[in-house]
Amino acid sequence: MKRLILIASLFATPAVAQDAEEFVRDNTLAIFYHELGHALIDVLELPIFGQEEDAADVASAMLMHYLYDNEVATQMVMSTAQAFTVEAAEEAGDVAFWGVHGASEQRYYNLLCIFYGGDPENREEMITVMGLPEERAETCPEEFDQADFSWGNVLADIATDNPADSFVLELRSDEAPITARAMEEEVAALNADFVLPVSLPVIVEACGEANAFYDPESREITMCVEFETYLEELAAR
Image 1 (tube, one colour):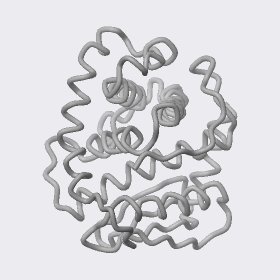
Image 2 (image 1 turned 60 degrees about the vertical axis):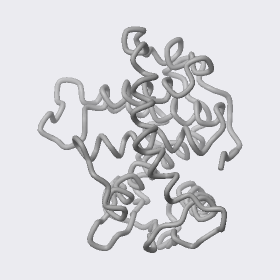
Image 3 (image 1 turned 90 degrees about the vertical axis):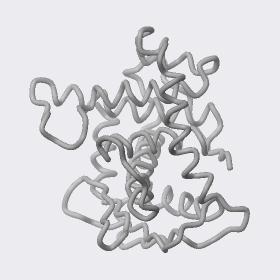
């Protein structure tokens, strides 16, 4: 199930990213895995203990851990964390504590912790480069084990050795080439790894906003082309 994608070098510091296209791709996949978490919760009727947005964040972190080798997964997590850092700076003094999503800075540390906890010996970058505090790092293996017990069992239940066609890609716009390529590869890979009880469309289209979302009524994941432009802007900051 482990995958390999072409990558550039890892960050030299938290503020210096790899190639902008890789940053966009990594974050596109991370947000897609977040929305896939929502989809699995709905389609598989999974129980949720806490906020669903938090559960979807954990799903994204665990999918990066499960699906990629350590070097690639580390790069993806660092890219995603860097995006949270930029968003956190923009939120400074104006965090919507009433919202369903956690503050970006908290999501940053939660992501680092869960990923670090999955392989502490080989993921020291989460501490030395990304700044995960030692006090939090001590509990991260336990946090990972909890996430693995929940999402690991869910993914094991839908894993397959026989390629299926549960995920169906619909490209309705050519305005986001990085997103389109990433989703083409991802849908093919997911169909080789997993089978769902229903068909799950993955749509790439213009939405009028930089967003990605799962619609429980239509049971579709939509990746908005505007989100790619937003990520390109983040990469430049």
